[in-house]
Image 1 (cartoon, rainbow, N blue to C red):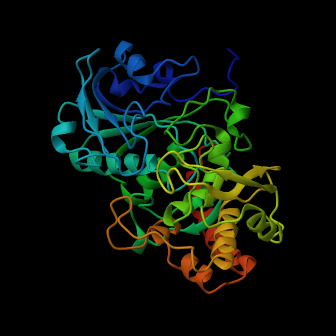
Image 2 (image 1 turned 90 degrees about the vertical axis):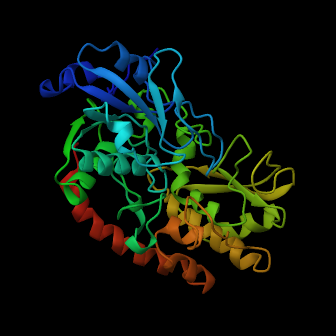
Length: 392
């Protein structure tokens, strides 16, 4: 196996574990991608450690083993047969650890691979853990991991608190350009100042690095995030979950392809090329999803090919596609109705965007560059806030 250019917090856990937490009872929040650079899973490494004692395991959306395929598919906790430890679900009856779950823990350690988009729920599982630990007087320690999209570019609207949900609980732009520990630091200092919060930082990570630059193994963090290429388009393409368009779930290229039975592939690609979007090309593509939207039906659409990831703007691209379909097929295109990620009232597209302005602008046939101008202002304002919490 190639030597990694980057060591994660998990790789360094034995070296960096705080002395004052030696012997602590630890609750570990983990998922399938919680592995070190040699592919050993965090649960095993924590069980074997002599620095602390693993007391419980917590799993986020999609389960500790990544077994639940789709959104809003809950899973329930169980007792791990190998260790006898309780495994608690944070995407079932509860999304925040209860006092009884934390009773036998002194510290909660978070080791989750994020994908660099506000919608991805693992950072909000961390937020819920921080909130619960703050109330219960427990410490939180985040084992840092790379942002697969690097740490420089940010894009998209800032979440309006009125549209807070499990796809965005606190103000962040859609593409935030932060590591999970940097987001944790922001949440700690802004919302949970009384929390005993620690970070095990990475070694060797630079903000210019995309995931392949780290030489770390890519482990699927959730069933529809198969490659770093998926993560690259996700900040724009996750918006499709708020529509009647297939975002490619039920295919081998989720989020990289899109379509619907009413779309003519060549027509939509022709419309998209008129936007002259940077760093991306569209290829007419047809597919038949095996599950979720339009399962078993032939869909026309396109595949997104990122040609220059430094120039590529995933959020703008996703909005451009929505505009193209909305304007070309006004009778067929629809916004999805709730419920979505535990929100029963607001439209899924509004909680994904973190505002209703995006939807209203698309409905009003607003110019794409004019739309981009207002969310650029919001990201510029957040840049100043973000600087205070960057660790690298």
